[in-house]
Amino acid sequence: MVGKLADLLPAFPGLAAHVRCFAHTINLTAKGVLRPFEPKRINGQVGEGEELEEIAKETEIEELQAELKDLEENGEQTKDDLEGFVDVLKEMTEEERKEWNDGVKPIRGALIKTRRISFKIINSPTLLLPRWRAITAATPFEHRTLPHDVATRWNSTYDMLKTFLELKEFVIKFTDSSSNGLADYILTPDEWEAVEGLVSVLKVR
Image (cartoon, rainbow, N blue to C red):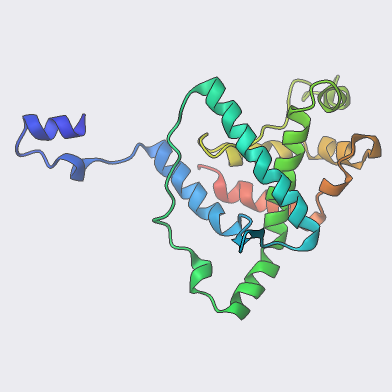
């Protein structure tokens, strides 16, 4: 439409006048904020601590499955190109990068584990999902589930983390239960603090 206006009105600046919608701009900003904290790949391997490496690898596969499911349900969406964002890690020395990775470990752990927990529950309709509904039954949250974020869905990471924070009591109880097989994904106090911080940063005020 913007291009057509440029043809019809010679004085119209065309694409130079194009501005993204506000929601899209907010979404791009949120992704830019999260980008430095996402698991990094180095020579084909996930650049994380040993305790998170396997979880991160499994989560990557599950994220692709979630995107395919979202595509089936909602049609094709444009995946945002974040190459224009400055990668601060590339500007760091090796020592600075190591210090950075150590410092943001709770944030990366929080993102990896929350994604893993939500995916596990959503995709276990005969075992984990009924158990989740059982622990939230007869509470104000009995119809709530833990959403999984999808790269093509606007603000979905904020929605996921906010829900985890609201249902923190139930998430802790659910992951603590050995029969659910989620012990590897129990969030540490530092990781819960990271979830709270991310929700605060990503919230559209």
